[in-house]
Image (cartoon, rainbow, N blue to C red):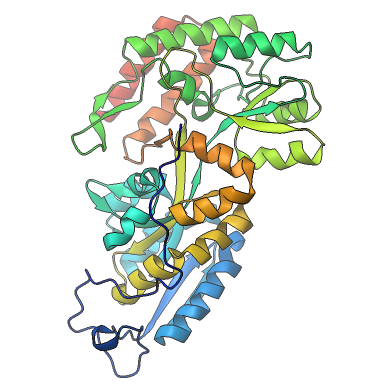
Length: 414
């Protein structure tokens, strides 16, 4: 599986976006970007909400933007988990920011509340990984500039198992042959399992949550989680629970502790748990997630990016800052260096993977990932999904529980 690579970005890419409507946007007191007779002048100021982890990088970008354009950028630090609700509350009052960092699965709620505006990426759209652009798009419109892609993969202790497994059964066989406590580890919750981590196995049974429309967008009218593949996946969950391979008493933290202490050769997890394994002296590799049902095991891709307020009074400048500063290779590499998440910009991704095989491994798996649905109807899925998986793993009737779950989700969606 190869990562889709697009053309390298010129390091001097700070030009104005030709596709924007520029009439009425010039001002006598603002700076201008280089561009000869076609230069765009920007005025005023913009406010950006950012979390603490990305504040320093964004401040450097903001300083460069101000030096180039004369537009002042006010950076406001927020707790990441509070940004979505505060953005929804404050934007309609005119008190919100021009730009805010956020997760792509907020997008359906942000769009339906009318608080975000489309972003004009122009030709720059082709310079980002397609899964990232898909994730920040809604009903045919692009609403954000992505900067990071995050997904899970199979973390393998190469001293215990030297070769990657060919499928799920091969993984379990290799894990048992290693002679340690656990053939395979994935963190689960006693009450709600973990649909996010189990989803690749579900997709390998051809049981996505939703189908897609002609444009590739998730279609809430096409609920597929309850199809025949979903029932087969439910039966498989029950078998894995009965065998003790999947155990809702092994939480994410316990799974990490056991893997780090060498008690399992395989751990289904994300890049956030790799440093603990490396610090413990383990030799590790990143493998594709093995298929349990015969088809590709596709994890969810979570994408983080920056959104433009629908009430921004300086939308042109805000768009320029997002696209050509936050979206620059220099800034995207810097964001990767402080956060460890795979860059969304293809050129930044290529620069990162050249020196980091861990990032390269997660990136390869991520190239086959699917965006986590951001449509509002996904809320109904989360309500019933995990508790059903936990009940099945713990001995409940797979077919009956899965069928009831699908009916409950359909009823909640209406």
